[in-house]
Image (cartoon, rainbow, N blue to C red; front, side, top):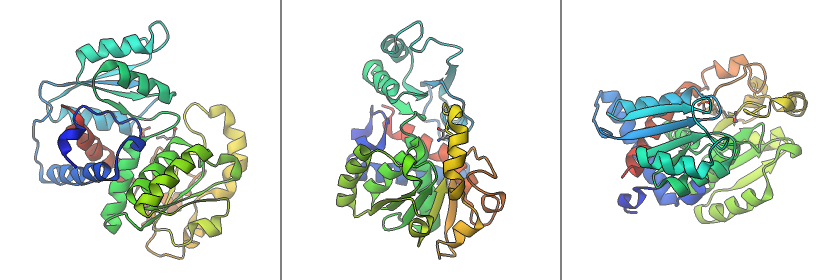
Length: 314
Ligand code: CP
Ligand code: NVA
């Protein structure tokens, strides 16, 4: 894999990248983190500009992009949908073309995956998906880094996502795991299983990489032997009206000490993309306990996002 082939590319979903390319991003993230720990501050984004478009709120993603870009000399500009026209008074295509004339790259967080696709198609600059209803690829890279910090190469390890199995985080983890050869299980009520289209696509990646994918509604069956148990909020941004239904469906899937013990593995780690609702998808003792790596994960958002920009910015 020639790293030069990554220049100018957008990251909309990991589906678009080969396992070798994803491996390059993981390894570069490790280097970026080592540099940060040594206090090395290179100025690799000097003179560059980055537009940060947010239709939905964010702490980690926004701060990771802003600090990673800014500390290397770049100029990030935050634009919420209170600030600019995003499909309201101006088409996304036009916004894309205007921003592409002024910025070297664009990050977008919002609802429709179609919007990041249009931004990428019309802006002519790299576009990074900072979360849509369908995918959260920058999160998944930070999660792989965190898993590898604990276990070495993720190939052959078992990651289990417990909760809303059709959400953006679960879907992105299924894609990246199947590409990298990590075994991946979703434990979720049937009503919240991901669609067959994505599952079938990931099965084709898994056949190549040696990953085993499974989806089950049985906690006992799914969590057995897990190296990492991962959960996310029961109600994603934009789905607030579904709260009562989700609590009903997902209460039996809460990650608590009893569920962690069912892995049968004393070394299982606990992961969560955050923000968390303690007492819903995870109990206080698990997220605050020794198995929890959630703040390493949060920190790793910054290193991985810097690596993504270093690799793709021309
Ligand atoms: N995990 C994550 O994306 O966090 P934010 O919503 O705070 O960006
Ligand atoms: N699934 C969550 C992830 C937040 C980082 C959401 O979309 O709200």
